[in-house]
Image 1 (tube, rainbow, N blue to C red):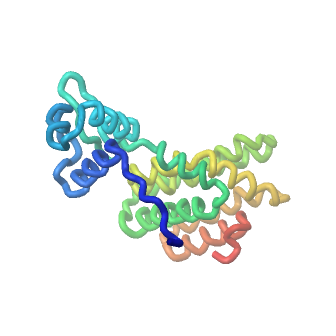
Image 2: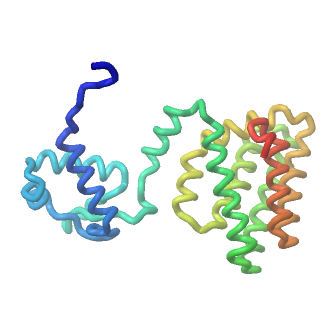
Length: 236
């Protein structure tokens, strides 16, 4: 019959991983909980200890569990999750750069919202603004000296500080994982800018909007900055 594909049986290791994942999702296993030992898991799942060992090795590589000798294996906190899976996803789908950039924009939007609307802590805002101003100074110095790598580094760090305002470890980890792709995007976006002083001016406008405390103005400046610097987002 047409449109019918052969059924592929899932490996035993994969089935064990799916059940362990379901236990974590349901709350049966929570962060810092001790995972039953190999013998107990093998007996519960009706498989060999080598299968359990293989499944736990994969989870350990991904940062889902960690071995704490001599106590045993424990479920990790979310901040310990390895970025390897996401990195490979990016590498294999690298051509779709716009999806990655949209993810970055969402995180920056959330950073501005947290900084200016949710938190509204003067000391916290001042600290972020100081960090942003420092990166603008670094951009200006890099433009004057013609140091492209320093300019890109400062630009990347500028946006990193905005994302860090969310105080979300997962966001920070995602942005760090996206580092090489962000660098590539910044290089491509700035190549067409003849007067590189425009780069620092765009960043200064965003800082001024943050200082004024007008979230909607800050978002419009942010969107304008992205539109002016990235051809992928002309319709933003």
